[in-house]
Each structure stands twice: as C-alpha cells, then as structure tokens.
Length: 163
Figure: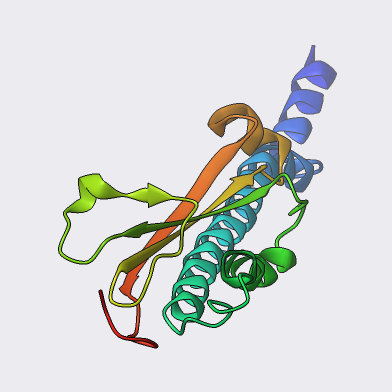
C-alpha cells in the first residue's frame, strides 16, 4: 500500500508532459487566430484593390479618351481590370467591370448601362470581384464565395461642347 501511495505522489509532483498538454490546448486557438488574421488581411487587400480599380476606371473615363474612335468603353474596362490582376484567382470570370452613365441634369433613375456617356454626363464605374476565402475554415463560416464590390461616379470633362 505504501508503494502505491508513494507512486501516486511522485506522479502528482512530476511535470513531465505539461508542456505537451499546454501546446495541445493552445495550438488550435493560436492557429485559428493566425488563419483569421491572414483571411482578414487578404479580404482587406481585395476590398482596397477593388476600390482603387473603380477609381482608376472612373478617372480614365472622365478624360474622354477613345471617344472619337469608339474604343472608349473597352479602354475603361481594361484600365479598371488591369489593377485587379494582382488578386489571387482573378480570372476573367472573377472580376466584372460595369460602366454606366447618367445624362447631365438627370437623376440617378436615368442610368444607362453599357455607356460611358458624353461630355458633362456623369459616368459610373462598378467593379465586382468574387472573392474565394483562402482558408477552408473561413470558407465554411463565410461561404464559398464573397462578392466584393466598389462603385465610383465622376462627371465627364467637356472634351467637346456639352449638350
């Protein structure tokens, strides 16, 4: 009986395996925090990139470049998409650029999609990116795909006389 009691005391005072137990308890929480930080950082990067792409597209649109030769719409889309090439998985289907215009003096209900407008009209560039989460845990919590979008409106410069 005495040897059993002594063995029990020796095990109770021993600290063998404590660090392994601490690691087993802390590691999942630590990994969850690290992957969450990575996912948040990439999501913020994607949102900032899409915002900047819409801004660049709108700034290009107001200059009127390509108005005379009919390449204006395609040039605006190309300028906006150029910045989104850095996003992971940004294939042609992942990024959508929509250019619309609102005639001068009209309200927002007169939005004309697929048209960059004329001088003094308002032009609207909308960029959408279908963001796929990097980590499987975030994908199961947030969904398989998240749409990140940005919208920018500006007034076209009067490169010819306004109507």
